[in-house]
Structures are given as structure tokens and as C-alpha cells.
Length: 240
Image 1 (spheres, rainbow, N blue to C red):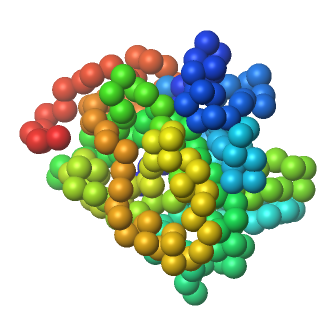
Image 2 (spheres, rainbow, N blue to C red):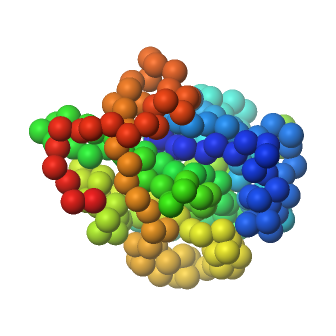
């Protein structure tokens, strides 16, 4: 579920992104991933609740604050470090540090899209979900700070809305997403009840679904190339 991201921000587009999110890049190194698998623990551009006017780099795979060795935690917890279900937060299922982070250390992950599989007879056909013209938008998550001041983050997932549910038909889950202008409204959610109400909306940025190469599901292939975003024909009939 949303383990694959399209986050391609070339240097020439940085000023436009800064204007959209009212935030400034703090690093010269800008993520340029046509496709990246979360299990690669990539560094992506995020905006933090603590510094909402800055765009910083953070590792996609959350770890407890000040972890001795985050990689050990990632290995133990697997995909749950990449995404966090909304219904696991503020419950006995959730570690205290996660509930605290989602209240006080929310983040917006800058993306042009994310990939989801549509399953037919146990075969997965990937689609890139994106805005028109691949305009940038945000995925909602939370972050932690490590001993070396680096940041790690996880993306929050909610129940799918109707459109995403048709595409991602097996899991019926989707990442919580927002338009750039809604950044502050997310950061202003300061209580568990406010966040739970937001989770129940099943809101997603209006998206389109683009069929892409099944190669992106193969971790043995380097798919960080625009060629893997070309339209392909999937031998299935859909209405999305």
C-alpha cells in the first residue's frame, strides 16, 4: 500500500514549489525520483510542523526518536515503518511516541504522485495516481528526529475513497493527501479527536490513474527513469 512514490523536483522547478507551499528548500540536493520504492529508504522532501516555512530532506522509514540504529528497527518492522494506518493511532496498537508525533510532529511529503496496484486474478497491474500535468501535492505523515538531527518519517493511510478504491482494489487503503494551500490546516489539527475526524473524511486530492510498466514492481530493476512512466496497455478493463 503506497510503497512507491513519484517525487521528481528538478532544480529549475524549485522556486515554483516554494511559492506553492510558502516554504524554502534548505538543501541544494533535491529529490528527483521518477519512481522510488520505499524499502530503499530514500531521502524525500518534506515540510515539518516545527518549521512550516522550510523544505527539508528526510528518510522515508520512520524510527523511534533518537534511535541507536534506525536500520535495525526498519528491519524488524518492515513496511509498517513506511506507512501508518490511521486506525492504529491513538489506540493500544500504537506506540506512545507515534501518537505524540502525529499530534506535534506532522509533516507534508512533497510528491508528484504515488503508485498503486490493481489486482486481477492475483496479478498486479500498477497505476500512477497523479494530478493533471503531474502538479505537485502533499502526502500527510509524521516524523521523528534522530541523534544526528536527521529526520525519519511515515505516511498516514486512511480508508480509500471511491476512486482510489477502484484502482487499489485489494487493500482499499490510500495515503492521506492534501493540496499545497491546505498545509496549515493540517498542521493546525492539534487533538486526537480533530485528527480522527479528519481521517474519517476519506479525502484525497483529485487524481488521475495512469497505467505504467509492471517493471516498477520488480525491486531488482532500476526504475528511476521517465521511460517507466510511459503509458502501457494492461490487458484488463477498468472504468477509472
